[in-house]
Image (tube, rainbow, N blue to C red):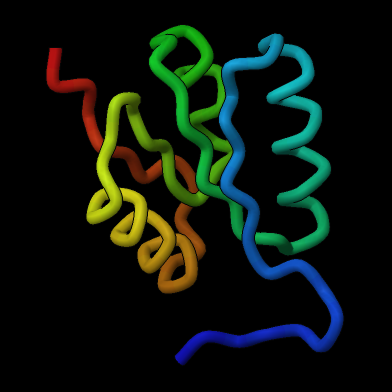
Length: 88
């Protein structure tokens, strides 16, 4: 089952379209606090840079089902960098 912290944040879905430095800084901050993280981007370099900082990496474009699966995987695993490979 999902563990929910009272009054806290359990998971963040981060659109990593911002600068690479900002995305990496935020990802590191979030992971150090035990918050689950799903990052999404269409930029291969950014996805590679964040590989070990997110529970799930999700390539753009993606649909609702893919997002739901990524969130469920993030809650169900402590392994960082699980990803849906770029279909291109």
